[in-house]
Image 1: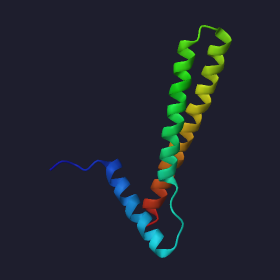
Image 2: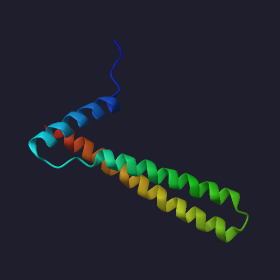
Image 3: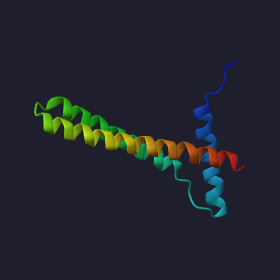
Image 4: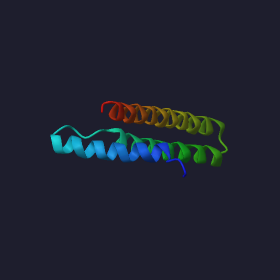
Length: 93
């Protein structure tokens, strides 16, 4: 028998926890939104990298790469927060 995917299992557990929290009147967990935010930030990062690759002006390229670095930092922060919140949600049981 194949072992279940830990991330898939975590996602199912989080959805169940979310439903119980809604039923009991607690606020909705934010980690699903944080994963969405992280994906958005990573798309922005990729776009900035693409723009940097298309420009020939060194100062423009440097600026695009700075923008990219900022988006990547935001994505990594959002991913870390989402993972932490997911673990806290599961461990709160």
